[in-house]
Image (cartoon, rainbow, N blue to C red; front, side, top):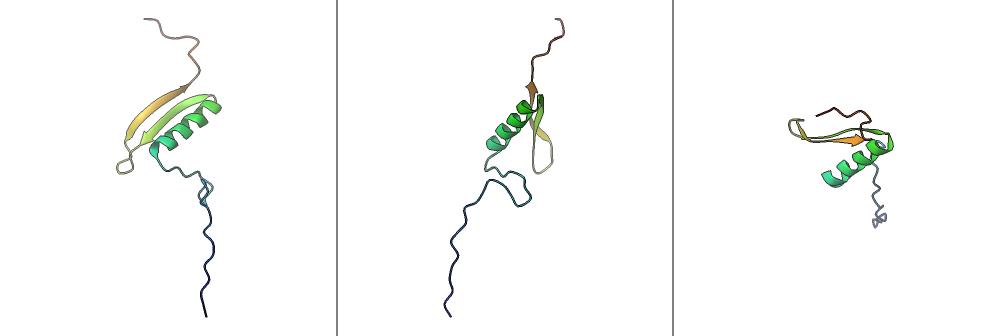
Length: 70
């Protein structure tokens, strides 16, 4: 019997677990910034894979209505 091949399915940007899949760290960081901006602000931290140290940290949010003096 001959074997038939199924056409290749296009890969979606979502893993089977429902989490988004990004090709680069920049895409991941930009998406996290977008999530933080949409939710009203927060801290976006990038961690290293090998030792889980923070390699980059950004604070996203509104300007502080009561900034410290000085």
